[in-house]
Length: 206
Image 1 (tube, rainbow, N blue to C red):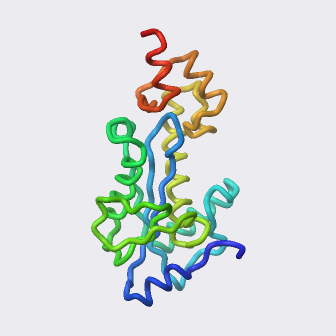
Image 2 (cartoon, one colour):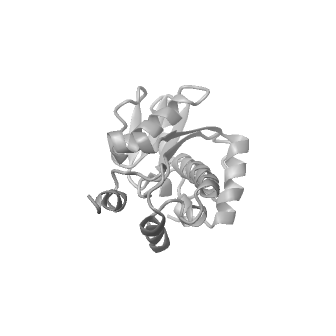
Image 3 (cartoon, helix red, strand yellow):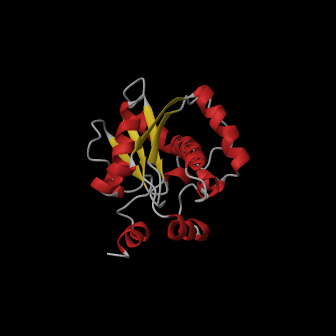
């Protein structure tokens, strides 16, 4: 199989679901910035060509698909903050972002297709998990693209205010240059204090 298709959505439709949302998050691994989730309800008659796991797409292709999805689908994007990540833990915070994204849709879905192997516990609608869903379900692929582009945009914006960490290119992930900047420039309010490299710098002098 070359890429994601609509088979999971079709199965949900056969089971009686009419509004089906694909849900995915991005930003579990970074040392800085929020975790971002998207919920996308595609129109089966207008599915953009070329949808795939956002990690498998070039930046140009992602940006193109972002505009196409925004034009033809119902989209909701939500975040969980650095404070929430540190208070709750990254898994729970990423689920909170997913719950917020679903809640933000104009229509309540009959079914959510969730990337991964856990249904967020605060979700109040029927849901199904799909491991590697962003490579299997077009709705989840679309959500992965929307979440990635939006989070990258947030990190580029933060990079303007906190230069030197390379967030405009590393999106807060622990690249070599980002870790060096942490050592040299210190910890910003947007760094996740519960993440080991950040925690170690904060407490290395204690």
